[in-house]
Length: 198
Image 1 (cartoon, rainbow, N blue to C red):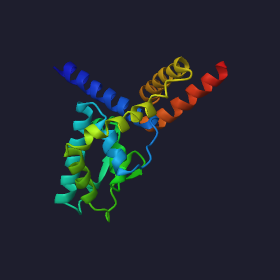
Image 2 (tube, rainbow, N blue to C red):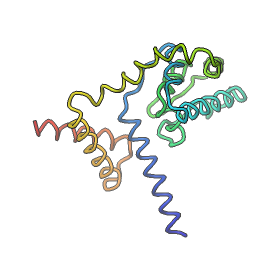
Image 3 (tube, helix red, strand yellow):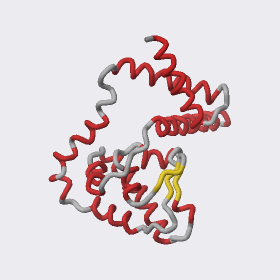
Image 4 (tube, rainbow, N blue to C red):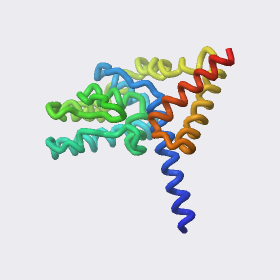
């Protein structure tokens, strides 16, 4: 039983590391207009879309019920549950940025002066049925925007990413570095190795 418990803890730790690794490697998105945010969120598979909507809804209701409570106005993006609801779904981070949230290191923070109303408006737009069908053609470029990453030297890019993950795990497990430092160092090391090969 102790063995099973420690194995589950290891799995959870590996998931946290993987999610924080994904976040550190992904570029922070820029704020975009609310109409584009809604289109991006609607373009997600249902599971990702509902995870994002559920998390945004929880954040909005917590802030609405306790506007002064600072803990409801800050989310760590490397937290597994937060990452699944905000980092993975397309448009989720941009949604919070459009609602006034700001990046602070590995977190998103809603300033004390900011209101919860934009988040409630966003949720109302997402639950409205009409525009989904009419915006479908406009949504198709969104996945294409992230699709070019693999093009032009896909195999070498894939090899670099695999090497970065390998180095990242070594730096965290063997050297005890925190995930953010390890990811940055692994990225530098893999890029230097790739340059040396060319």
